[in-house]
Image 1 (cartoon, helix red, strand yellow):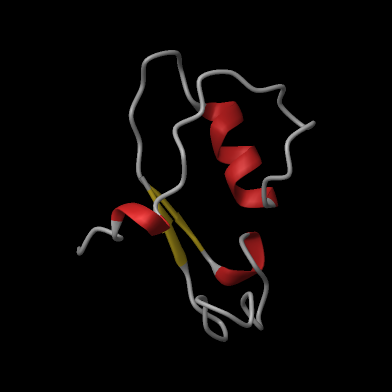
Image 2 (spheres, one colour):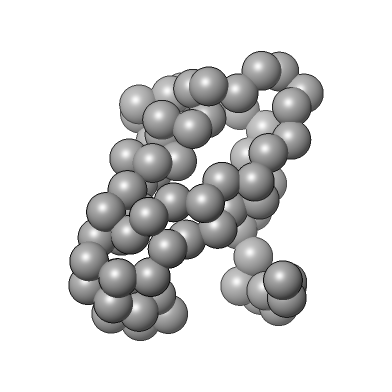
Length: 68
């Protein structure tokens, strides 16, 4: 899989308060299942990410989302 250009990558997060951040539901649920120090790749169906219609910008209609 191709990596996003540096300008489009999400910033690394050191600390956050779960359920207080503006994360889509699938990512919030996945992060809760992780163990400290664990590295995972999530594959979210559109309904757990940005919905059927995407974000009307970079994420198309009914497109699954991969987060590493």
